Structure formats: structure tokens, C-alpha cells
Figure 1 (cartoon, rainbow, N blue to C red):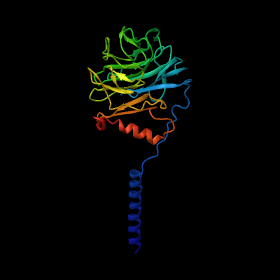
Figure 2 (tube, one colour):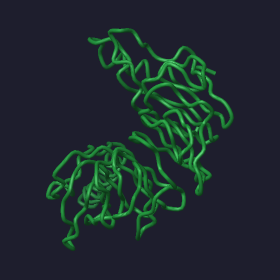
Figure 3 (cartoon, helix red, strand yellow):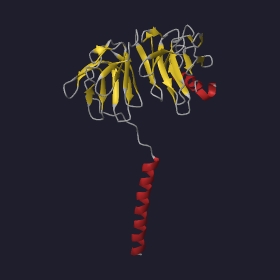
Length: 282
């Protein structure tokens, strides 16, 4: 009898261990916010973030603080997983967009006129050790950046020229020169996204793209612009603009922003975002 009790006890113990293991695997862990950044001295707003494949995170905004080496991080900084570091002398005015190319190059866009102490009109490149301008840059603020799989950089904002040539709020940098995307759009661009198939999506406060009707969102296929169905609601009681875009691995594109009439709830926003799934429109 004692042997049976002992065996039963062992079996119960083993079952308990297995049950605890099963619970550990079947019960999702509660998500929590990291406290790594609570002691940092970022003294102003952060408008943009980006990360690379090496574990670095970059932030851009309107701030200035000193890293562990007492170097001033002016409006842009890097987090390596344990500490912040400045990117050279940074830029002289706020950063509103960041993007990382496949080769690890960081691009910054905003309202600045210098980067690393050299002239850089609203857009610049950081190669890991120094800043450089992208030609003549653009003639006004850059609000959005996106990098294509082949490394091509797209910039959007409220500029009318890029590299000295006419570019209606949006332009392309191929690594050595700027080019326009057709006639561009007729008002500000606030968001850009590139799908895996290379299609570029632009969102903003515009009503036309390439001369055709496109309500706040449009697609560039490399040679011409097209609208995404009827676009988004631009009634006088709406906040109109598309301010966020994302594309997934299936080439679906999702849009967010102040599209809906004031007073509509978050569920309505979610429905709107779902309606912009690429597969549902085309």
C-alpha cells in the first residue's frame, strides 16, 4: 500500500509539473512597457522612430540632450539597446521623418538646414560616422520618408522642388540625383509606404495626384499615379488628411488619420483602415 501511495504521489507530482508547463505555454504573457527609457534626458517631443537590422533604434524630433560621452544629441539620436549616443553634431532644427535603407544607411527629413555642421536642406544621410547632404535637398519641410527594397528613397512633404527641379510635394532619390514622380500631388504629403512589390503609396491632404482625382491617398507604380477607389472622406466637417500608411507582406496597404467626421468613434476608424486593404480595393 505504501508503495502504491508513493507511486501515486510520484505520478501526481509529474502531472503537476506537466500541467504547470502546459499552462506556461498556453497562457500568453502579459505585455508590459519597457522601463529602459525612463531615466533618459530627452527634453522635447519625438516625432519619428526607425530601426535597423543591427539592433539600433533611432529617434528624431525636437530635442537636445547629452549622451554618456557628453556629446550633444541634437534632434536625432541612436539607442543601441543599453545607451543613447549622438549622431555627430545632429541637425540644427527638428526631424520629422526617419528611414533606414537595406544597407543600414539612415535618412532623416524635417525642417533643418544643416546636418553635422554642413548644409543639408531638409533631408540628410547618416552613414554610421558622418552626415552628408542629398544633393541640393528640397526647398521646404519633409514630413515623410520611405525606402524601397532596392534602396530607392522617397521623400514627401510640402516642398515644390527637389535637387533644383520641380517636384510636387514628393520626389525620389536614387543615390546620386533627385527626380520627380510625374506631376506629384497638389497638397502636402504626410505619409509614405512602399509595398514589397515596389508600389509606393502616398497619403496627405491632397485632392489630385498626377493631375487625376485622388482624395488624400494615391499609388505610384513607377511611371504613373492612380487613385485608391474614392479615397477618403473629405467633407468640410472632417479632419481630411491621411497621416499614416503601412504595407504588409501581401502588398496590402492600410491607411489611418483624421479622415472621419468629428464625433465618430474608434470602431469607425478601424473599419476605415480595413477598407483600404489592397486586396479589397483592386
